[in-house]
Image 1 (cartoon, rainbow, N blue to C red):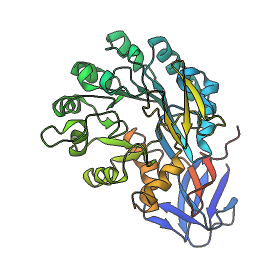
Image 2: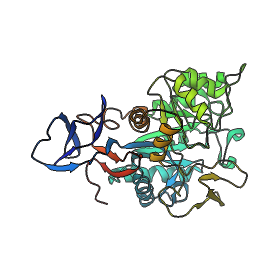
Image 3: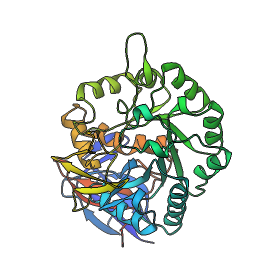
Image 4: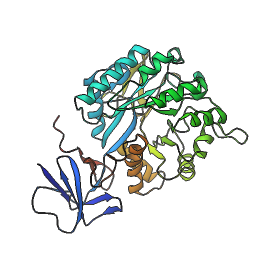
Length: 379
């Protein structure tokens, strides 16, 4: 049995940041949060005054480490994506497939299943962002890929049996029975890239929809006589919303409104990241088109935002500086709340006894110094 003791830092526990606490980890799991002098036996890790927080969990990662998931549906690609994001504190993620053909979706699901079975660090499941979405709110997605799934495709899209599946769709584009079938098969269904009305979204929520993909972006806005998708999302107390806090996708004031409107714990940070995060090349190809990040903003040739160059540590930092939230709450939005959204809140996302030791050490500027996924990462 291997024992590691983290001490001499600010440790984010259930009570907030504690400076007199030490963390005891055995065989990759947290067994105790102690106070006072650390136990003498075990490997001591001196945090040197840094901030130890739960590892970040990103539920929307299109690419990273120079790889776009749509272009390379292999286990090696998933390992590269996860490795690229880990340097920014992400210890768990959902590789996200943008709207594509059924055979690409099938290969992506198979690769995700294999990656989880092989223990690729950080891969928790898959996010299928489309192709069941609305042409009027397509963003950079290829409308030629859009379709309504039949029973066979519903079965395929929900076939991952060893990880989490999130499906983003436009509720007005698919029958209510389709949403119900996906939920019954274990998928987490979100509204996104949707031109739906408030009534459309309420019907989706009643059918089992529980999330909203990148709130405010690619959806109908809140207006006085038509609340739209945004109004439905902000009104509903039970659903989660993902937000991209990069100062580009959404104005900070709009994000502050969402945080005030939603119950605490229902707003989570996402990156919608593209291959340049953790990679060296600012450009990548999507659907045969070259897309480049300029001054940190990723757009296609038509000028639509095409994902982001955001990493999770920057999202946390921006949440503190742009939205005025304290660091502990920003970290919960990056770890605890995404874990709860995914149904994994009893295993990851917190620093507490019984949880896997997925940890990130930050400095005072919210820069990542070290990370652990259930212990040392050997790859």
